[in-house]
Image (cartoon, rainbow, N blue to C red):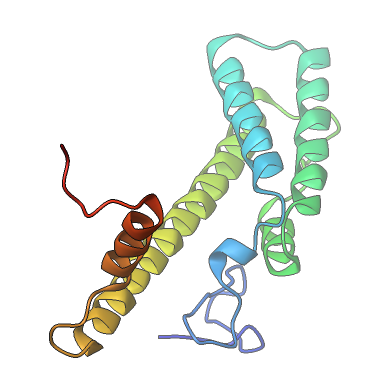
Length: 169
């Protein structure tokens, strides 16, 4: 089932991505992948810290600030469709100093969303590679019998430039 970005899904919190030619590729939705990866790693590490040590009020306030700043930084590296989804999912804390549980939940949610995004990108890249291989194989099959493949032609041209006949002496 493929939807155009202008269509509504049953779940207003999700952006559905299809494979139609007029829709953006998943890999195009992350405009600054290195930045998104760095922030994702930082959030994952912060989540581990929150799990491993008790936090005082000042630490919880600081982590809440870091979380909010991370969301804003992530938004600068994402396409508008993903920014909208992230804004819908990253709800503000109920108080200025959230509890440890609130911090863990918010950070775990963000890490999960980022991992889903990364898996989607990896899947899209794999699908593109499979499609490219299939297209290359189709082009090879379309060659007339006895014709050389593009790789053979490149190798022959290289050997001709080198002045070799392919024999090693």
